[in-house]
Structures are given as C-alpha cells and as structure tokens.
Length: 216
Image (cartoon, rainbow, N blue to C red):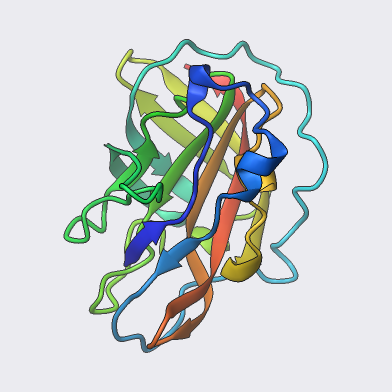
C-alpha cells in the first residue's frame, strides 16, 4: 500500500513540457509500506523489460484537449478501474488513492490530462496491508505493444500503446526520465515492486511508459 509518492510531476500548462533538470532531480521514488506477503507481484523479467531511453516515435494522432479521466482499462492484465484525482501533500509528495480503495487508479490532477500533449501520470496500489492484490498488482507483467485505454469525462477515449516497462531501485529513481516530457502525449503508470522488506516496504518501482496511438 503506498505511503506516498515522493515525486513532483509536471504541473501541466503552468510549466513547459520538458521538466527542468534541477526540478526533476528533486523528485523521488514511490515509497510503499505494505503488509503480509506470501509472494511478490510480477516484475519485469529479461524477456519483458526493455529500454525507455529512446524517444518515442512521433505521434500519429492529434492530442486531445484537457479532460478528466474516469476509467482505466488494461485488458492484458485484467484492469478495469475507476479513476480518482490525486494531488500533492504538504511535503510535496504525490498522494495516492485512499488506502481503503486499492481498486482505484489515481491521476495527478494538477498535471497533464491523459491524451493531452505532455506526460500524464497515474499511480495505483500494488496491494493492501493484508497482502491482497491492488489495481496495479500485475503491472510488471505488461509487455511492449500492450494497449491501455483511458475513458475521459468528455466522452472521448485515449488509447496508449506500451513502449517500455522498467523496474527501478527507489533510491535511484530517475525522476527526469520518468516525469519529463517531449511535448508528445505520453502516459506513465507507476506502482511499487521489486524486493520487499517488512521494515521498509517495497524496494523499487515499476514504471510503464506508453504513447498515445489512437483516440475514440
């Protein structure tokens, strides 16, 4: 269960699409403290993990105007979840959905709307304190080419294609790479993963990189 995302994603139209280096480096990893675990959630393996270092291909569809997202669907891992807006706490950490709502996906509401030009950020619980799966339990099992659909309040659907899935040590979280943007309509899905310690929670973060490829 997330205790807080020590991050500071782009604030949307108030800031340029590319996050300034110093500001992005001040952001940190997703920090989780969770409960009993008999097994770890899936993590990217040698056969699934691939690099997100290269720039995505130029967009093939026109970005959508801003509109709140309402539902997230990822057929490949059985996700069909309502979405809620999350913001920053007093320390500048990105809040997550309420701990009692592990099935919710949280969108950083002061940032980019999914489908609009820029990098939209969505977080979700990997599990509950009791070890029950959360909305992003299987996030690390996604592979390149998987489809992510986000329904929006304007009755449009933004369709993203996964281009990378990576696992980072939370102490070496590459904030500029994750939260920075190229101006293209992109999406990041973030949850915890990697090894687990009862004292400190998960030791890393799974990050999915996806690019807008269709609108409906």
